[in-house]
Length: 111
Image (cartoon, rainbow, N blue to C red; front, side, top):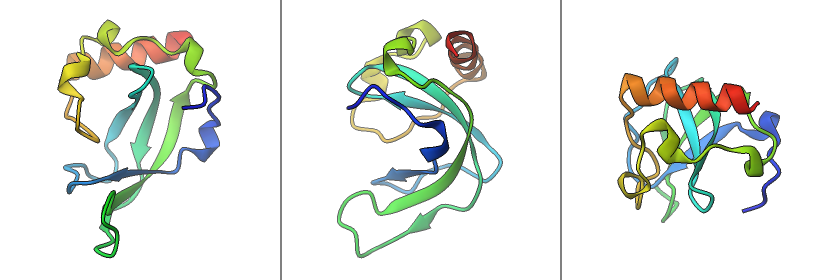
């Protein structure tokens, strides 16, 4: 995974399973290889399914609210109270309010 991030290119998220997200919700993006959080985004539209795709058939649009431009600056996911084991084999998980607030604060501070 390249460390350079272009926030304007964060336009959608794909998932192998039907995501439990809704338009207007906010989310934290996680770089799995780096085990770091790097952006806060808003979900801007409905989730859609493309049954012709074998992998990542679910997709929903996002808009960057705050994002780092270099993963070298990204805080470790554990700093937000989120453990990498809870993320393995998942394209997304539901965070507690405390985890989301901590992750958002870490990202804003690093930005």
